[in-house]
Length: 336
Ligand code: PHE
Figure 1 (cartoon, rainbow, N blue to C red):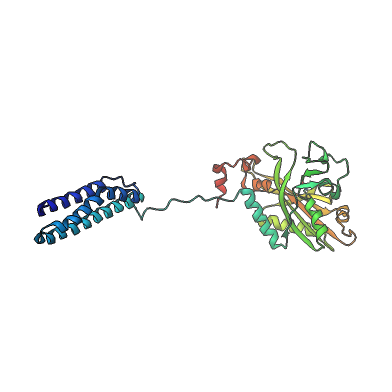
Figure 2: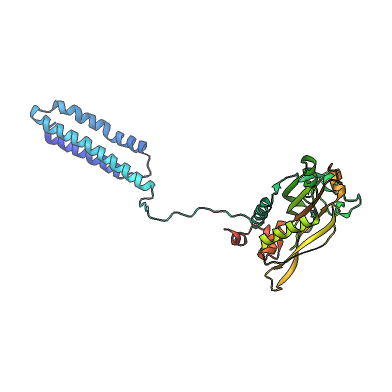
């Protein structure tokens, strides 16, 4: 082999390697690219290395320089391929100044918002949270709460029974009894939870809804404590200028029983009007006794409210079903 043949072969191999790598799709894996490169060059490169020895002594130096240049050129072509590959995997043009895509941000449901706010107010007034089961026995849901055995609330068409003696609780009041059984007075608890009634799903009723129960039991507690606490709650929740009123009402587990109304504008063009937001009363002595407390020594008061109704009265929502629809266009108005 002459020196000019040698130099021509080295040039040709370099050009072939570059053409091969430049022609590859940048999505080609690096090990695959290297495999193809090796298949193209290994034999020819080894032949050129061997040929060095058979060249005339005077030609070896320029041939050796050309051999080293060739190896560097192949490496440079491989580096260029890797760079092209890296650029392709970052989308080519990476713009570090582009604003980040905003991440999904959830928001608290209006019923939970109201529940949290009410819980905060009562926490400041000394109430802690108590929970009870959603599947209850007839005794906790009705019997211990002084319902007479033939009370219409116990009818099959009003209550969802799970079996002989088990039902989905129709209110959170059974938690009153469970709390009094487990803890000695003084008691001040708030019991939030889901309750169930065999009701039609219409603008003002839902068959499953949240309730928030409150209970205070101690020696010497009177109706004044009930009225003062609930009026203070309403002042804090609705604002000091909002009017509230108490009126008589009946629940078998309280005596006397009352309801608290608040004057609200539901935004439906009918202006301010009274809306009942909770039922309340002095805990009936029979309930205290059923829970094992001495009704001569202790008295107490309780209330129950529906946070969905409260959310409606506060935000001017006229159809309770909107709180269940999960329509983001509706819900995002409450996001904060
Ligand atoms: N449990 C009653 C209801 O579901 C509400 C209530 C609770 C009334 C406590 C008085 C006292 O309607």
